[in-house]
Image (cartoon, rainbow, N blue to C red; front, side):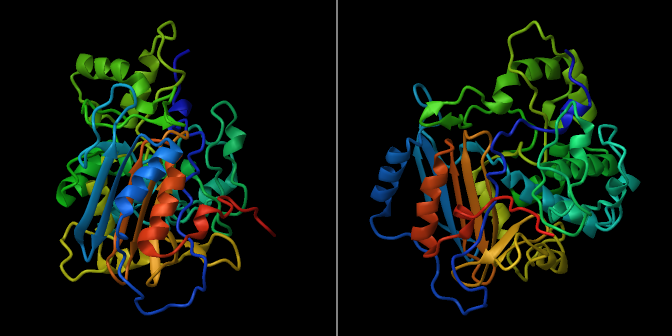
Length: 415
C-alpha cells in the first residue's frame, strides 16, 4: 500500500518519549557556583565497567568548560559482531534531542521576522491530516515549543481524531512530537527548504556542525548502529530503508539531504509493498531524525549559554535567554520546567538546560549545560540501556542527580 501524506508526519519512535530530561533532587533556589563539572580520577575504568554491565556496545562523551572541550572519551564499537571501533567522529541517532536543535532553528526564524511565535500555525499551514477541531486553530509555535499544544506525543495514522487537542492549548504541559512536526512543516513552507537544507543553512554550516544531518539518510560509514540489550536492534530506523531511498535519490538526481516533505511523500508513493523493506519509511522529522557526532552536539550546547561574542547568525541574546527560561512547569509543585524547546531544572551551579533522547529503545542520548558556568556534558550511546550508564556519568561528573531519571515523563493533567 502506498504511503500517504498522513503517514509522513511521524517516525516510529516506540519509546521516543524517553526525551524527558533535567530535573534535580534539591531545592529550586538559585545558588553560587559550587564546583566546576569534572571527571573523577579513575573514572575511565568505571565507565568501561558500566558499559559492560549494561551491555552497551559503544559510547562517546564530551565535557565542555567555558566553551572549551576538556575531556573526550569514545569507547566500544559502532556495531557488535562486525562494526568498526567507535571514535569521536562517529555519528549517533540523537533521538528526541532533535527537538532542542530544531527549536533553535525555529527561534532563528522568529528573530528574522519569518515566524511569529504567537500566530496560529493554521495561518501559515494547516496539514490535511489534522481533524476538524476548533482548538487546533489556536495552537501557536510557542505552544508547540513549550509542549503546551494539547496534541498527543504521536497520533494514529488512520485515526485523525487521535490528533484532537487533549486540553485548551497553553494551559498545561504535555509532551508532543506531533506539535514539533507540524512546526517543521510550517518552517519548510516559510523558507521553501526541506528540513536538512534549512538546518545546514541556518545552523550546521555556520556553527561548524559538519557531522550533523536531519535527512533520515546518510551514506557516511562512520555511523553507529542501534542495539537493544547488547544485540543489534531488529529495527534500525533510517537504515532499514537506506537502499530504497538512496536509489530514488539517484534516479531523481536530487540528494536526500535536499528533499522536502513533498519529496518524502513522493518516495512513499513509489514504495513497492512486494519488496522486503521494513514496515515504514522514516521521514525527515524535527522530533527525532537528527543524526550527529558528539562534538557537534557539544558545539550546539555552547550556543545556549550567554556570551558577549555572539555571531550575527546566532540567536539574539534576548531570544536565547527566553529559550532557556522556564515557561511552563511540567508538574505543579516540582522544580521542573520547559522553556522554548529545552527542559530546565536546578543543577549543580544554578539553572541547567538540555534534553534526552531514545529512539525505539536502540539508543540513549543526553545533553546538559549550566548557563552560569558554561559547563556542558554530552553523552551518546548506541543502546537503550545507555540510559542507566549516562545516569551514573551525570552523577559522577556533575555531582548531582536529576529528577528526570526517575520522574513521570508525562504526568497526568489535574484539573
